[in-house]
Amino acid sequence: MNRDDRSTILVVDDEHGVRQSFNMVLKDEYNVLLAGTGEEMTKIFIKNSVNLVLLDILLPDSNGLDLLANLMETDPNVEIIMVTAVNDVQAAVKAIKLGAYEYIIKPFVVDDVLTLIKRALEKRSLKKEVAYLRNALEKYHPFEAMVGQDKKMRKIFDLISTISQSDGTVLIQGESGTGKELVARAMHNRGPRKNNPFVVINCAAIPATLMESEIFGYNRGAFTGANSTSIGKLEIADTGTVFLDDIDSLDINMQAKLLRIIQEKEFERLGSNKIIKADIRFVAASNKDINIMISQDKFREDLFYRLNVFPIKLPPLRARKGDIPLLLNHFIKLNAQNSGKPPKIISEKAMKVLIDYHWPGNVRELQNLVERLCTITMDSVIRLEDISPNNVNKTEIKDMTLKEAVGVFEKGYIAETLESVSWNRKKAAEKLGIHRNTLLAKTTELGLNSLK
Image (cartoon, rainbow, N blue to C red; front, side, top):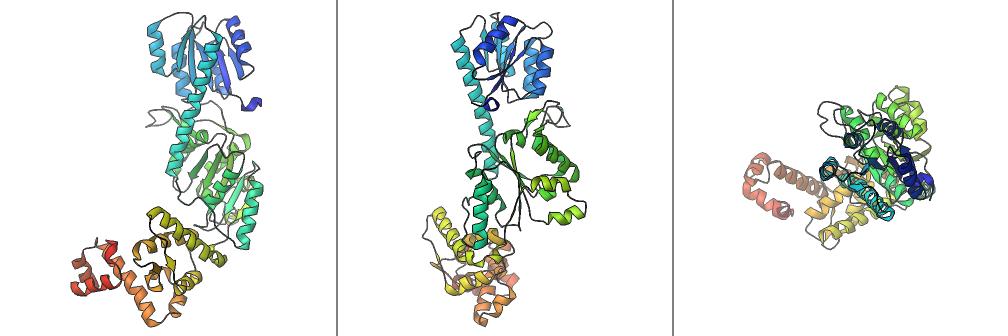
């Protein structure tokens, strides 16, 4: 095993012989650091990424229990095993309450200590995995596959396969809804980090005042309201991939800090001077022209070049119209699987309109439309009149007969009016300027009764 991949254990004991004994036992499987005093321990701990501490409870310059509390405050992820020659039940109980994994008494059996260390490190790994899963659940996306046969998309698929094996930074640019996060996930899932965390940071959704604490984490007391220590998304993402969505939303100061992290591969939590190593691949995305932002002094040029090692530009859906039928059928099948109902069919006229449509919201808009159509259409076939007027532009209306255009508008308008009054038909009829019985007949004719 590469030394960089091994867990690091810090042995803290004032007896030279004990330190050397631990070193001999552990050095074949772990990176071992040694300290004889509390002060020496603190300096080593701040400068190194430590996974587990074997901590003597009686040191010449410090109380081990006080050091335990300080270590847990500095890094809640670290596992600590207290070591002492005194069998003190009260001290043992206090150590466990403060967060120690276990309490062992000298002399000890080597195999027992090795087993204890292994279990403690497994617990640490599990805590990190739980934190990652919680983060992943917040960003759950139901569409896990990329769909496309267009020549432009096939080139992107080939590019993803090639650069997924690299650790270089990636900048994905494209309009909203083109699938930038899917590209990032595809690269992660095909690369050597696939079994490690994929953490999404939505730069546009996090207020600037909270961005640093969200990304870096913070120690208790770092700012008003920081009542406990919290790890940030970068710590959760260690050994994995961070996807920085809407990177153009970061302010200039935060851009500078991000640049340092990418270059130096380390950072500190807010309120702490402990260096935390960051073995992370960064993938960023933007729906804006960053070159224009650079010319306006809104984006750092050095950060752009640092991110743009592997550039990917996603085409809008209107530039790959041949994929629209493929995507429609994919989403219809996906909706059928989720609902447990047979998949619907799209009529020829409806398909033509959807292919000709401009799709300003791209694939995301198409997916949302399919979900809506599969819900509101009672027939097994989705026809032209089932499509909302919001999804038909003037050019498309011009290609319809008057009856078809009126039917499309009428159904969408009545549905939106009903929704605006929480399906109170009396109020809806008043807003529409028609009799309630006329509205009942219309909702039955247009298949709207099932929407309530």
